[in-house]
Image (tube, rainbow, N blue to C red; front, side):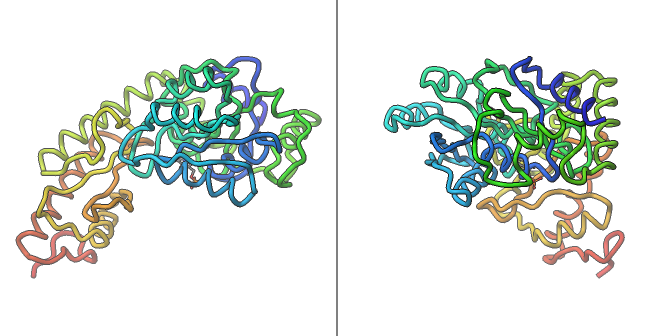
Length: 343
Ligand SMILES: *Cc1c(COP(=O)(O)O)cnc(C)c1O
């Protein structure tokens, strides 16, 4: 089953023969940490392009493991700026790797990794990519040999359960003689172990692997990447239209958005008590994501997973009710009430 999953992930990635798929127990962050600690050695120096929470996590990982790195901190409301990346590459002569996130899920910002890969070619650098929130839905058109590693997990656009993640690594780099920085996150040992006897070194998350096998079967039956992206795009459009009608606007400009998750804010002057909003929605079976964005009256709505257009209609209607109640009552709707509380 593990081998079938490795083949399926490789097929979806479409990178070809030079790469190997290494599964790792844990959520997506475990794969990012395994990727950075296993593929960067004593001679590497990585530039982390930070424009959100998830790229900042890469920096933290490098700091903890004392991996030679530098950071280019950019505006989290925009895609990474290739001009600034190029300037940094020119200034700092010794960058061997570029690390970046495809879709910064905290605010919903899509980065141009194809553009980044062109810079990597020009400057002889390799890429270490977090594609966790896009893998399976948004394809990348990057020359495969440029990709040293790419981290993904079962539980985003593949619709599996959380508990297993993967690193797709260039096999020649994976097999280099680096001293391991971690026992359980050592990609080379994990891969060699699976190659030798098909066994995981440590207890595998069997139920999660079974769920992923089923999820990938459904993914392929339903038409794979293009079909999934189309489904998400229709949902995102429907959501945007509904939200605009009730006075919510997306925080991120259209050219940086992707139909995965979107951050919305209320019209100026509309107060949204967020704790109450989340509780009130959850009470009705509707779950959205809080955000730590500068505008406290903002929140995120994801459109991936097993959702329908009706779910989106229900959310928009509930939000409209909440806003109306908060405005007329001058107080928050009571989260303990099934419907609207008679005050
Ligand atoms: C979900 C996600 C991760 C992984 O987060 P976990 O909490 O470990 O699941 C990493 N990067 C991005 C861009 C993500 O969306």
